[in-house]
Length: 158
Image 1 (cartoon, rainbow, N blue to C red):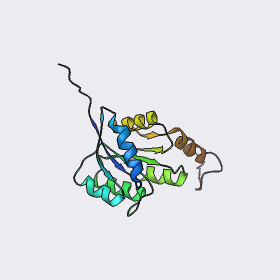
Image 2 (tube, one colour):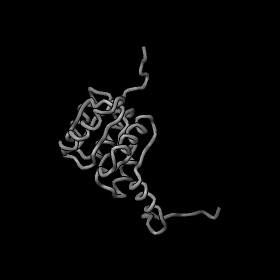
Image 3 (spheres, rainbow, N blue to C red):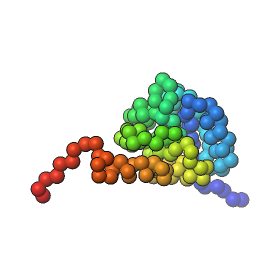
Image 4 (spheres, rainbow, N blue to C red):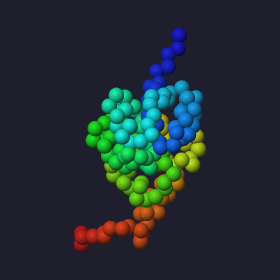
């Protein structure tokens, strides 16, 4: 008899568009090591679900009603610090990325990413690593180039 000792990755999907949730559920249903345990259409519902369910990864959109992804992530990190948040959004904006990293998101993937990269991101984040897709990494790196830093840098003589 053969036993599968791989840990099942438990996921909650949160997006304000039901068609996105349905598509993700359909895609993830094919994966033997991933289980969608709940879904939500707004940030407040995410927090309600987290009171009852303990996912390994929360796939979270930025733009949602009642509570946006930034505030939702901040609340999750306070109340459920073991929940890893993987942002899945169409916004490739430095301010969103920085804010979400600052409040504790474990990863950031754009909705135009392919299936394989999204699955890779889910597994990396579930395993404890951070993950930023290629386009997001380019955005982060370009924001660090000379002339793009929006705060004063002070160097000492040393």
